[in-house]
Length: 215
Length: 232
Image 1 (cartoon, each protein chain N blue to C red):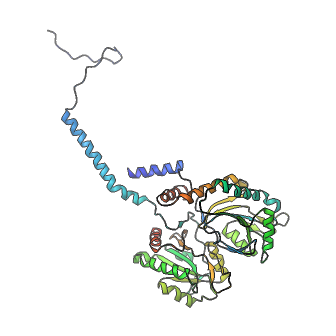
Image 2 (image 1 turned 135 degrees about the horizontal axis):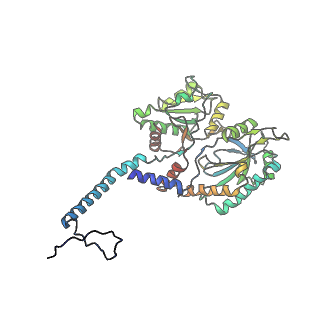
Image 3 (image 1 turned 180 degrees about the vertical axis):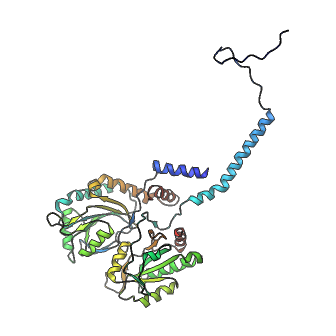
């Protein structure tokens, strides 16, 4: 009887999804890079805040217009539509070109994209470090000079990381990058978990992860 | 005299007036009460069984609530190729499979979080049964290979627990591997001798997948409970 109740509960949880959660996909990579102001920015700098990562060459131009517009819209709507409680939210764009010792390159790219340096900042480092970080850590392809015009070819999109440094969403350009609605909706799901998954309610959230997210 | 006869059964549809006579009660009131009593006893026994067995069944199927953050990918933990134990033996992920492996990135000159974490790990291990301890390995990967040579690192980790193992390698290899474990390290901004680094504790399951990440302030009781849940 109890087993049947558990089975029915599991079925109901899976079908009706009374609590929605974003999966805890994997650890976001650790790094220590510089930001557009010349200061060190590390994976620990975003600890405790929700971070939306994007990836772009310094001279991205028209190729990044849609993604930049999406980021701007998300930043605007998060303030009005997403209640993250005391948890902060920021966007970090990782420059795919090397910026060894020259943060002005980052500052220029940030200005062109509209990044204010606070809620949206650009970070970068040496070519090898960034290639390892983006390729092995965020699982995105990056090839310097491989574009049709000799520009850096890359796999644009977004990665959503929670305050514990865990990847909660991975968005590829062709499907969701221009879609601020999806990003805001997922941020609302994450915000709900951050606000509510405490005490007894954490059991329900863990059940949701168990039923909805495990492979 | 006309003999009384029971009415001949007729098809129900033959006449609406053919209403069958009322049947006598099949059971006497005493028998009915007995049946009700039996039903009540059955229900009471079922409730009792539910009360006794229910919590055990629920406990059996209830997932463990981890104090750390549970990762849900079955992807294998990043390889530690290129790193060696203080004995000089290369670290092999295959050799670690079957055990729960707790990985911490630190260094021997670390003034605060490293000794605190290593001491907490030692207390955690002390709280496990001998059988459990045999299936848990604790690795500290040095983020300061320039100063942490093998004897120094071995002496440091075994001072907390003789079973703890030190791991080290070239700084570029360590940097790449640490990044994949969500860890960064870099010389501190002030230019001193300390190294800034992430202080998370990472748990690899017996299947070789990254399973749990704990914050530096996790208590040894919570950690021990999580480690037990990771054991096969």
